[in-house]
Length: 153
Image 1 (cartoon, helix red, strand yellow):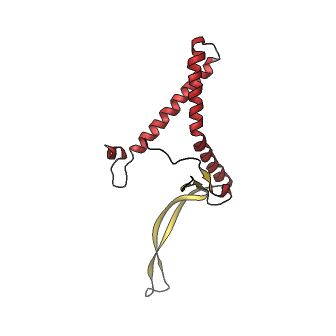
Image 2 (cartoon, one colour):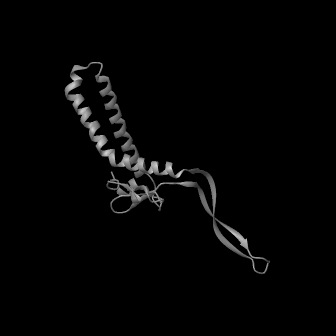
């Protein structure tokens, strides 16, 4: 399994920078979308006054799908950072809770143990989803079309 970029992650200039770039200690990781968004593609247009001085000029065209308010985009960036930076602690806490349940409460099952059953289910789901995500990433083709999992073979 490939490890993710080390934590802690942070937002550029503590969120005061309009770029909304998420950083690890060594390099940028991603930029959160803000403002008008959509698909961009190259296009050509003819410029010039007469047929004698016309030429083709390349430019970028955009199909706009919507807009994301800057305040919402900043909140999204902070949520991503919070989730990533707290992921390991959450998994550890759930693991300790399940271990506590297995050792002390399971032998004496009462109504309140149902909550811990739910926590055990959540932990299993988180662990399973992490494995599925890792496998999906491993199965993505690289630029030459080979799957990452086949390269390790």
